[in-house]
Length: 261
Image 1: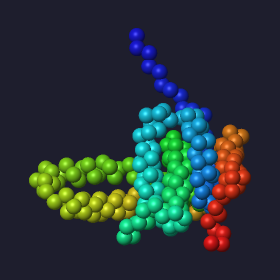
Image 2: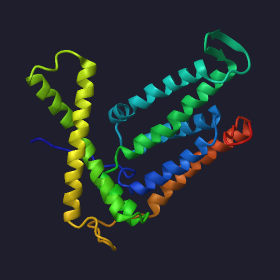
Image 3: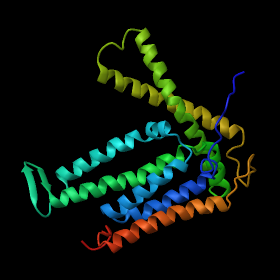
Image 4: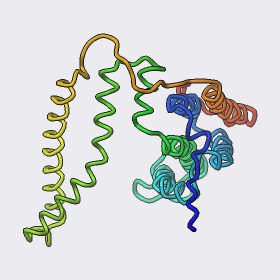
């Protein structure tokens, strides 16, 4: 007898997507307003400790966030080489100038990218687009026409990969995909654009014919609940931001980017 066990989604994965969106907003705004390594580093350490409760296995976590871990150091390297120079100059060649200030700025930028991008990817990895649309319309009271149009467009994004694969196979079957990679890429991108516009037009007409654009209030098949657990997630995001900002202020590294230069 084979025992099949399906892991139940975590409590965080079952939370209202609007709560995840609000938690990311209250966490991100303070980190955007400053550019220092302390606030971003403190926030990143706390986030890494909490990611285990987000409902993603470690394999899923690395598969979804590897691009963030790759791009964040590249951003730091760019700032280190071409950022505003200050303090001691370590190396200088043509337009490249590595200084004490540029290295500090590079570290702060890299940590800030990680602290902002990682929770966004992790929290929204378990979000269903339909649940998000329900929350936006019922909790945040956004216009139903806008929400349903966005949901339909988001559902179509998943078809792009299949369309690209079909175009590639069709070109190979005709023997026109063996050389000229750049020309082939541009041609396939244009074909995919035309196909997407045609599909979007048909989808818009079909939705209008079914009354999705009708004025007035509308009903929803599923109720979007926003309770105590959702508020706790939002407060957790605010608490992480508060701890990070407090640490930066106490250490004297707080660097308000909108202040006087």
